[in-house]
Image 1 (spheres, rainbow, N blue to C red):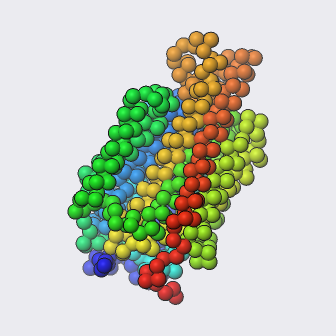
Image 2 (image 1 turned 90 degrees about the vertical axis):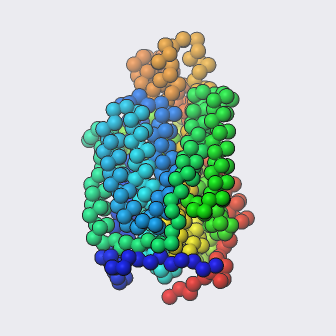
Amino acid sequence: MTYVQDIPQAAPAPGAGGGRSRWTALVVLCVSLLIVTLDNTILNVALPTLVKELGATTTQLQWIVDAYALAFAGLMLVAGSGADRFGRRRVFTTGLAVFGAASAWAAYSGSVGMLIAARAGMGVGAAMMMPATLSIITDVFRDPAERRRAIGVWAATSGLGIAIGPVAGGLLLEHFWWGSVFWVNIPFALAGLVCARLLVPESRNPAALRPDPVGSVLSIAGLGLLLWSIIEAPVRGWSSALVLGAGGAGLAVLVCFGLWERASSHPMLNLRFFAERRFSFATSSVALAMFGLFGALFVLTQYLQFSLGYSALATGVRILPVAGLLALVAPLSPVLVRAAGTKAVVGTGLLVVSGGLWQLSRAGVSSTYGDVLVGMLLLGLGAGLVVPAALDSLMGTLPPGDTGVGSASNGVSVQLGGALGVAVIGSLLTTRYQDRMSPPLAPYHLPHGLSDSVLGSLGGALELAGRVGGTSGRLLAELARSAFVSGMGLGLTVGAAVAACGAALAFAALPSRPPAEHRTPEH
């Protein structure tokens, strides 16, 4: 099969020349990417504050997180093909502008509903940025050894964003209002727009297929219905007709999406990529690792603040070991791949993630930070091993002309895995929490609004306990913390099982090395 090579514009863009300019362009791309990854962990630290300031329930917190991931995952493939067709730098800078504008909207949202909508807007901008950064890197760094190092730097930047986010969020919340965690994105976006125009070369695939809006609508609708059913199930009942109907409809729409992509002459997701095991099992491994990482961060930030009593800044500092270890290990993962092979690194990384989640799930009401630190370190170590190794495997299977859509597929696996992790782990937590809280509270016949607040989140229960005071308030706080920790344990145990299944899949099916005919001698 002959692949169409990427052809730059006739006039070389600034920075498209020698080795130094390639690395300068990489710096610009990675610094801009920083705000996308920074936003996830900044927001996680702010979740308890949103409970206090906006009265958000746990279900609403899941939507605040997942609205971003849904728009991100649903539009990334279209954005990837658009980047290949219309120009990768052009799509990247447009995404930066959208992300910055939506961040300003989120910062000044006056309600939970408005914040969810703004988060979706940020997801649109991120969807345009992420695939463009990877496809530009793959186009600029043609030598396999250099490409691996560049992707390692890209992955380390993602880890750095995760590392900086908790502490930055804690510092901002210590001195400013909750919207500052979104406002901080705007200077990065403005600087990225200027530097990208000057330093990042433009490239496109002149033979790229036209966009696939039908596929995009089907993917967003299917994923949206599926996530809605999972997130809303604890509130409406897992066996309710509405939840089951939405979940079934979501699965049916996703099947239609697959059939449409298979029949389309210009699919946004080329299913032939998945015939290559290095591609299909690499994307699956990333999704399963992110399922555990995103789900764990969603509950841990609430646990550290509401259960262990840390401030937002203290929580950010204590989340730092997860992200810091991820950032340190990520650049080493490609080196380990060369020594041991993709299968060993990815499979071991998922086993480590599973072990970390299992250790975290053992936390109890009387646990201390030291009791959960080992699990957090294992989580960061495992994710740092999996993501770069799987990403290198994925990108190494792609023809140069399809790097935009192919790298977008990796981004979809990250966001979809993370969104499902937040949805599933968060919903299991909420279900167990409400099951433990409802019977003891039933005899007191609390007013409807007050009952919803107490059952909706641990923060709501602790707020009421503080108002009540005395023995009754103390007992309510103890009951709520116990119910929350029990739900967290259930959710993280399921996450550990999912990651363990992913490890078994990687060891069984992920090729250790690329086929001999696909290898390129390294210099």
